Image (cartoon, rainbow, N blue to C red; front, top):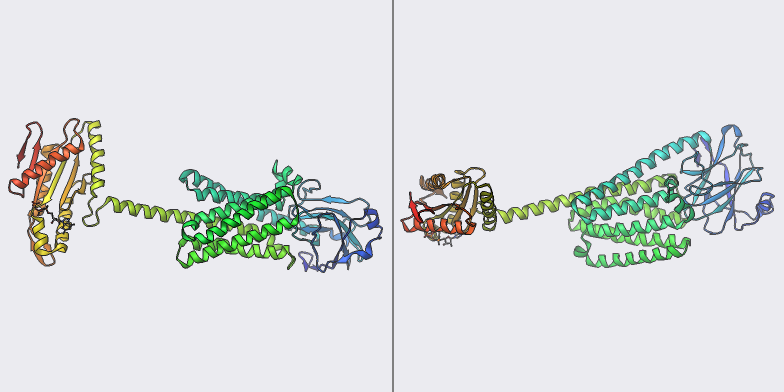
Length: 541
Ligand SMILES: Nc1nc2c(ncn2[C@@H]2O[C@H](COP(=O)(O)OP(=O)(O)OP(=O)(O)O)[C@@H](O)[C@H]2O)c(=O)[nH]1
């Protein structure tokens, strides 16, 4: 292993004493032959009681280089360090008593003012509260500062990204009322709190600093809450209950285990709980990953986002598990990879969620279009035109402005169907709809009321003008034959017109227009009839 900057191989030896004798005895060398070499430079302390560790230099670290003892990823651990020839220890911890605010939360740093001669040792009394190993190294002060600055920059970027995505998710939830956003926000906040508890930034947050300093279980609780919230989010996001009910049941069982672990965490700080929590986390992640793979196989779009966001987290959690059980050390990049994985995962899921909502909106718009517009003619459907007529009538009454309706029906349409077939009948309807609609203003309403009946609503229009419009519609059809599949077909319309009377309902207005249409039919077809309310009789034009 190289000391960056100094470009000098770490010539150190780490050993552990499985006991907690008095410091004077240890410093006097009474226990020196009972220290067992650790094999590498990882302080992997599993005992809950304080244990002694010894770091011995194989070659010298001169005082001129301002060497510093560095214990990376200390998390919640508390350490007392005896510098060579010093009878008093230097206490160090990220949170609580022993904080050193002159360095970042990357590591516990203790200066070695007199350097460390070959064969000289530094003694550490370690009270481990987390099972992840701390890596010991000796770095020149300049290197410590450089790495601290990089650490602060990285952590600030990552934690700020998570906080921003969480706030955005909260805003989306408030605006759209979509529960997934709230679950995503909760997940990110719990992950953020988990990271700042173990990463040490909690020491800068009033309230949280005291909580974490006094109780190492706080971070674990946040971790478990994050697992619950993220499982809830993912189940909701993938619609797991509907799409993969079996996996949903397994995930629910997993959530119950997490809830049980939360209860256990309230009563004990045993490291086994951390291992159990990580096992449950891995099981939960495996279920979610399986659901993602199945969803992706079924071409469920959101499953792809899920895989994209959770594959790195899955791999990192597996690596962290391996670190916990001692299969490998805890390399420096893992300190950053884990939070970056959280932040990127949150970002990708946020994008995925927006994509899902966009898709839902497109589906809803399409369904609403289908419900509003008739596929054959492009006119409004009957329920849609009726609703719009009702609203137009209310608005006309309120504003005391005129409104008229035109009702028309294709003459002898049944005959066209019978003689030329249904498809030609369809084409006839389509062409008639096109020709008539082209004669209307953009704000006139045009709807298919029945098989070959069309209702036109003309806002701001009195009967006289409406009769003119109706005549225009009629002539647009009978002015020249319709050309369908090389055939020329003559068609005509019978039209009824009525103007809205004072306090009249939409239904009554329609009845009068229908009566006028009936009058056109019985008067010989291919004509326009207006229903003149005041004279209570029909006018034929
Ligand atoms: N091709 C086609 N025919 C339809 C559609 N909807 C309804 N029809 C037919 O349209 C015909 C409507 O006939 P009516 O309006 O009752 O009678 P008509 O032959 O037009 O006679 P008059 O209205 O008295 O002039 C019926 O035969 C329906 O089967 C459709 O979407 N496509």
